[in-house]
Length: 614
Image 1: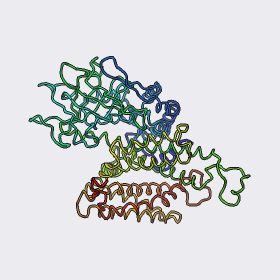
Image 2: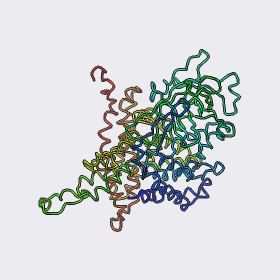
Image 3: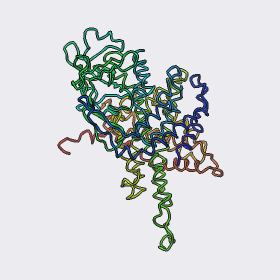
Image 4: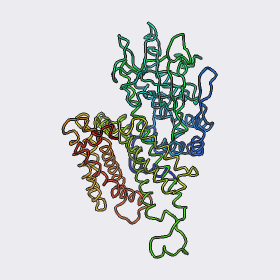
């Protein structure tokens, strides 16, 4: 089973992505150039990624002596080859301007192309953080920072990270203690930006140490002490710094000096084992540099505005994580569907099935196995449609009229927590069902589905946990600008409902979605009826689950509208799409009614639970 037919349908028959060539930025493109990019990425993913997915899971990154008093990471050769092929394809800089060496490729096509790599081996990766790092610098960096760091990342010479969390702080960025102090009296005269010395520790840094490129560009959140030498409490004191692993000159060439960024250890993870995850020490004297104490870092943007800058990268990463979760759900679906079509077991229900002399049937013929496959299909393909819809909004924001761009911005604000969290939860459930379809074999390492589940379990945690996404959605996104973004999402959903009501075969589903949407709106108002944030947010996760299911039901209803109303002549792919949508409306949308009562009543069961009662 290939991902390509589904991508082609979503891109061209549903989203009509070829119309993007009507925008001046994409005028040189056509469906032929889009297809050429998809063909190239599909081939690289098939040849350089997929065959080594199990290898990078079993041959984890390991730390060895680097001969300089510190540690370095050794990765399988397959990872190096995959990285080289990805860089050579031009995909790192695909969305950049021609003047930057890019293709000016729509983000919609880039996102679709990257799905091939994530399905083949999400653990090997496709430079997600490097691109996000460089994109941030292109927005918030100085011209020199763009030239020296961002453009070398796009060219594949350097890789990039984001260094936010700390061992004692985790997701609570207001509690970070990494400190940045001006490097001498003339710290503001460095052509690479105001130069600081950083000291602190960062945890959970993906790709924090590797030799895939010549250098690693760390984007580090740290606090500049006030006049009294103390760190400013909360997030107000956070600034953002470029801290390269190796120092570079203004020409972008390495100076030969190692910055004081040291690998303290590797985190040995449940999944995503092919991606190095590190604890890094900044400025602890492992690699003393230029006679001073601390790692050299260059300020990005203005002091104390680091979190605002970093959110540019974090939001991009969150959409990328949603796509990774989606791809893993689809990979498990493909594997379990293939297994179900080939595994004989049992006999049909009914009189004929009681005869042991009758031949066994393949398990795909059993209703409960079909249920599990339909669930996976509805989760995975629905999530993929949502991710590409969000990607199209990114293009709309970049190239639309001012009104279109602002509308796309608001829609993305509301949908981003869903785009990150919904696939992370429900495509994980798809992976669990893929194991179940395999039965006992699924619980062994002889089949890939157990790895897909392990890999996917991370996605509810990193780049903002499930609870953080829920608090962001209910606590900020649905309220911002007087609820305008929520109104826009509701408007899009209602437009699809109106179209579906005109079709007898979809009217029942349209009505169910309308009722669920009204329930979410009422729950939003009820949650904030007293203005008590602690009560409103006590059930933010059930709210997000309900909201997400309404969004996915909308996506499926819109997809079902592409299927001809007359049953005669429908292709198998169209029948499958209609059945998956019906599954979602019959089996999934009713969950909304179970999730929302605690939100509407501002139930405090969880909030009131005494610690000693656990």
